[in-house]
Length: 77
Image (cartoon, rainbow, N blue to C red; front, top):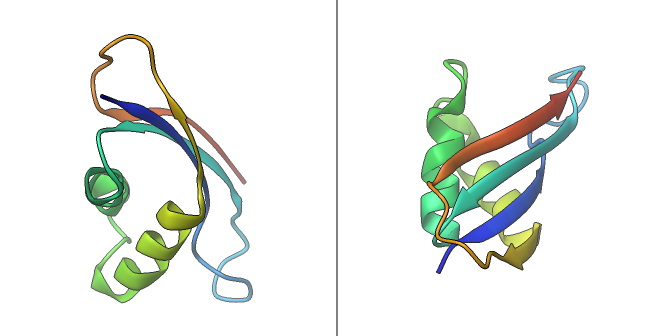
C-alpha cells in the first residue's frame, strides 16, 4: 500500500530562508525519508535526523491506487 505524505520542509530558520510543503508518495516512512534525502544536492547527512523527524510528523493518507513512489509536488520558497 502506498501513502501520500505531506511533509514540512526541514531546514530551520536562520539556516535557511526556505520553507514549504513537499508531497511525497511512498510505501513507508523509510522510503519517504530516502526519497527526500535524494531530492536536493544540498541534502547531505547533516539533515538526516531532521528529515526523518518531519516524515514521522507528516500527515499521511492511504492511496486507493498503487501509484509510483516519488515526489508529487513541492511548494517551497
